[in-house]
Image (cartoon, rainbow, N blue to C red; front, side, top):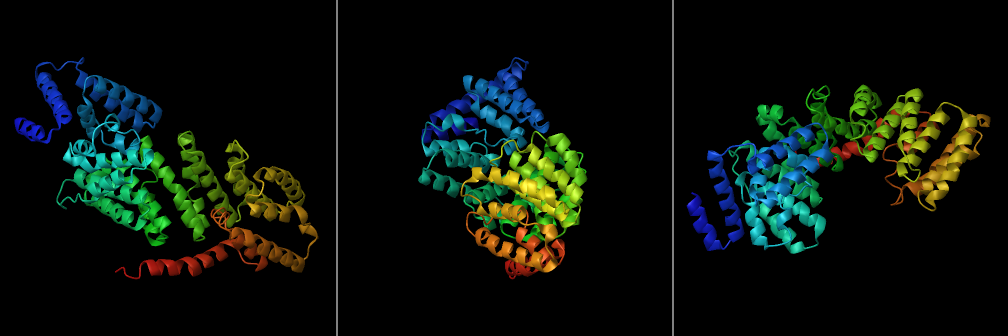
Length: 465
């Protein structure tokens, strides 16, 4: 077989590929006679296995250094293809650290055809390597022709349905990723659903690769949320409830923790604030284990969703706890999250009828808002509203008038392009309406969800069985 490959590659003129194959073959032959701990292949293999263990423990920086060490040894001894083989055996490394590009040694030299040959080196992972090449090119060049070639290469690979689990898994992951980079979420969703179906047809693979299964669910959750397919969001969240008390490794639990943000956003959106609050014990536990691993923006989003949920059920003590936590953990005052947290703090204090403190805090926040210059005018309108009015002196009719004027002024700014999304976490207009119409906040949120989002859901599924 090897001699046959030599003839083929000699004809193609792919000398570099042949050279690596020959080195690999010679080293493997030598291994049969000399399988010692000093063997270079074993060193590379052990380093990749160690990196895999470090990733399972969530020690990504150490894993990255270990992988770089393996690459250095492999490069010195022309064992790049063996290194790729080691990566393939520890495949979840590449799932979690795909930004460490396998093909980095080949990106500055050689033609597209040579790169394509390397991508095709192992058929099981051919598209996966193509995905890595695609990531590298998207991040480093505007060479549209090369990107199109690689995209076409990915899309033209179609394996049979009876192919191995690994081959189909890689095909679906890669095609979904490609469509996400192109922002074609409907197409991405199609392959994400195929991937989840594949796992569910092979339950043993869920046990063996729980992190990959959770990644698949997470990616479908994100696409469904973007497409406002809330029926699909609900189904995925129900599946994820089965993993709430997962005893799997640290990495899997971190993924589960990351799902909660979309879960909270979804339940808050449809007014099921009690369901959002039910995640609180899990969040407390997760923050103990993963505090350093969670990105500041994800953490702030989590805190603010929890504040919204507790305002929704009228538990202002817990709402205060989470808003204080958010403000404490934001180290700089120029973050949008900081001002949004402070606005929610004003709303909580208003609901608690602590009007003297409300005026004091509003004046303090008004000074901080100077740093925003002309950005986020809606924040300034809200702060002025709480700062100017003496609510305890207003009767019901006057209060209603004040809230109506506040709503009209605020809507002008919230509907502008720059400020439309800043109140996605907390629907302040609905909160104002709850005071104008003397209705509960959660009731009006549920009503809005029914009137606004249900027609979208029906339209989205009108052609579905």
